Length: 318
Image (cartoon, rainbow, N blue to C red; front, side, top):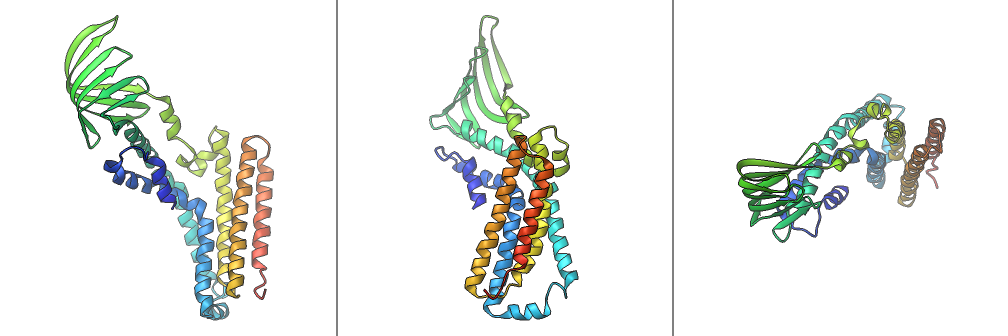
């Protein structure tokens, strides 16, 4: 569902996007590793409950509780805990960061191509800088192009053209044509094989760099306080994942009626959600200088401890 929503977020559905839909789907796959971290606490609990429900329904959970407890298999559970922790660390610090950088660049290219490159009336306009008219468009290339560059009084006629985003610029590349310049400084006509007109856009650089582009160390060393506090949030999330991993083992071994299992599931699920909401609010307070990191860690760790204590003391007979 999250992946589909990401696709819809990129696409501008009021325009024809059929020629780029596969490119959009391929691009959004790059952002999926970034979703794993925030969703992992909930995924672990859901996995624990699904396994519990399966073995509870056939009463096999009783056998597991007798012969496969955490105490008796501490090595196995330690390996599982270590494996998931390493996967989460690798995904958060390396995989999602690298993939997100590629995703953001391609997203900007797709967004601008969808916005600028697939108009309904065989024409498009870029921020009152350029107007381009063409006869047909195939694979993001425009054919039989006429363009007006307002700033310099330029008129361009070319066989084909395309748009790309490079660094902080929109680059409009014209091929095999002629250019006429008519302004108070110059009056000329030239024939070219290739002509590039660039439009600098400061917003591109701002759009391309956000918290997801950096690992924890980079966030903690950032001058931007929002990034800095996000680094501390990443540290907290590692401790939360560790606690949820241990809790998920407890969830798996709950033996109770289906009614109580569902009740425990709801309570624990919304308990994790409440922890994340409180954490998000404290991050908000940190960014607004209404809180300190000392209280941030103290409150969060106390909440994790209280939540874990409550889960491990669930009464299975109720």
